[in-house]
Image (cartoon, rainbow, N blue to C red; front, top):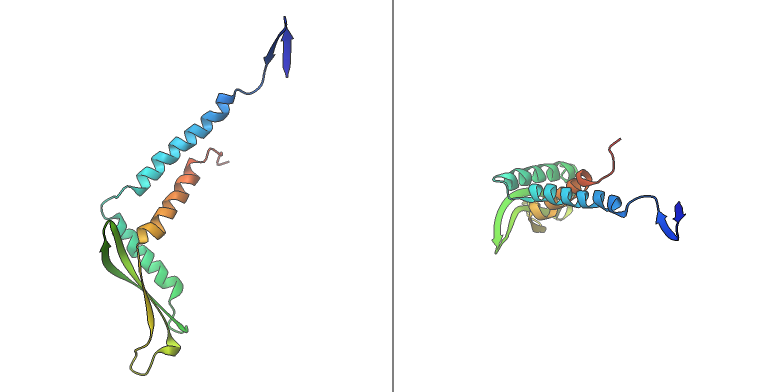
Amino acid sequence: MSFLSAGSRIHSGTNPLRQINPIIGAVGRFAVIFGLLVLPWPGWNEIYGAYFRAFGQAAFSRQDDQRIVRFQPHEVRHGFSRLDTQMTLGNRALVDNSGKGLAEIVDLDTRSIGWMPTALTMALILATPVPWR
């Protein structure tokens, strides 16, 4: 809606700064929450790695299944990178009578592939300026 008075035009309505403020607040909240979640808290990587391996083992490994999946703790360092989990993949049909067979071994960094995406998702959800109700 607009009003005309003495040749000037005044617009009423929403202030563009009010529309930007929730976005700035959300970005600020996101930065703080994400920063706190990804800080290298003492012992957190070991705790998260243990839960990651336990849930992976429970979800993908079955004794009566054709596939072999094992999640085990494993410590390998590559510069700044730290691989803390070893996943062994195999096929029971390819195992001989002595228990030997082909397997693929994959080293994982549970912080990078598990915790960082989880922390990002949590920070985005918690920082969203949408009301909960």
